[in-house]
Length: 396
Image 1 (spheres, rainbow, N blue to C red):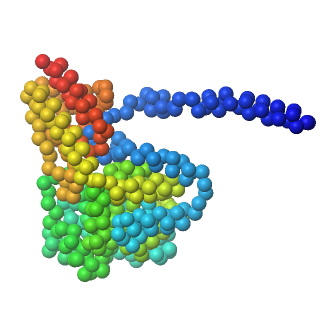
Image 2 (cartoon, rainbow, N blue to C red):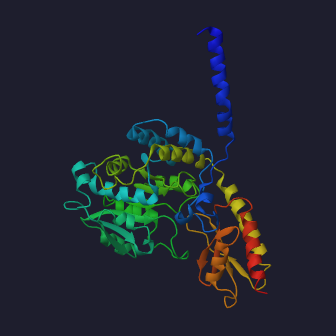
Image 3 (cartoon, one colour):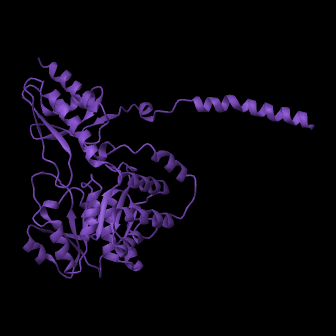
């Protein structure tokens, strides 16, 4: 074949490929939710897993897609990413887990086994191991099942004296709930500083469930400075990393022991808590961004949205509004709305909000509902106010 013929063939092949390439570029993106008949909701519940918790930072998608196209050593990736995350928090070591619950499960397992691989394989058989974790009764919550996954017994205490008396040869750790759970007015009998001092005097590590401690990022740094041994936090809530990600950070020996109980180690209690290279990369980038955010400005934006919503709801005849107290460790704006439920029940209003357009997810509180203004896009508050006006206008 001559040069001219070859050139024509190549040109013809290239030109023939252009329509297909152009068509691929121009093809609209699939909306899988739409295909499945699922309508997204406006989130006025907060960072709740049942509705997706948060929205990932848009720039993470490309980095995670790129990460998925190469094979790497997962242990090496966890080493490198964990070192960066630990540096930002101010502790010795860290690694990426499957959410806060995954971090708690692995943290407890690591405390029980240390770096003894025979004990790693032995779990959940606790023969020869410590078998109790102390928790303050007000810190019991629906997620502390993650503590019990390894088979330990939870010992509840209600005062400093009870805490001090609870330690014995079977005590493996102290679990502390860092944020608020349930009743916002409940106070913790023994503060974190006291817990750390009491436990460390007995050579027992303290594990903090910090899922409800963001924002700001400084709360994690505060825990590290206090000498907390293991810090467990979500990467997929206010941090806006991959929804299935979390962080276990703290003392290097304990973090390394926890990793031995996790994937990719096959004969381990945490093998099923697998984190892919994509999640590790996505969370690392999310942490790096989150650590630099202007948290006072984010709070001002949320406050403005919450105050707008309150002003609009107060225009509805018979509507009473108030703000719930902030959490112990962070500011979350929760607007409580109450009305004459004889005219419209809480169940009915919640249903109307969730089935309307747009769909709106809220929380319940006693005789009313709660709008959690925390992870909203600009303008969400206007949609919520409009739907509330429409619903209550139909009662008159």
